[in-house]
Length: 154
Image 1 (cartoon, rainbow, N blue to C red):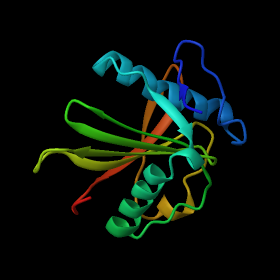
Image 2: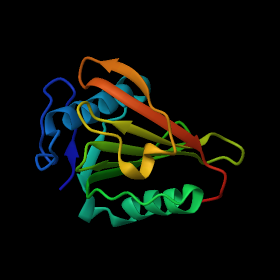
Image 3: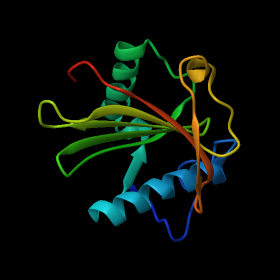
Image 4: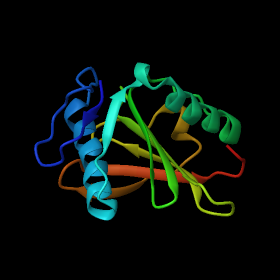
């Protein structure tokens, strides 16, 4: 069942099994606030098992572009379009959030972003491949993030 993420009253609904559930909920709320403020879009997530096409698309891009396979279990995912961009998000039990930004127009921006919830270690599958910058968030504490540009067509 879809859940509209509330960034004013942060809840761990859907991510309770994560060892960093509070921080992951804050990270998810941080994304919800961004999309509400920038695009007036309500950030709605579903259990990963209800949106397997989104989880598979993100997994395929990671595998094809960088030979990355995420070891953690996906908890929630969402896919939506805003301002000419298709956005896919997957939130993992470990506290990892992955988003794929894919411009619908040819030649537009296309990238994969990684965000780590406060308190989680960098996953082994990303540790040697990326450096993570820090950002402070009132909702999520310290977020560490990295990204890469997508070269293929998806």
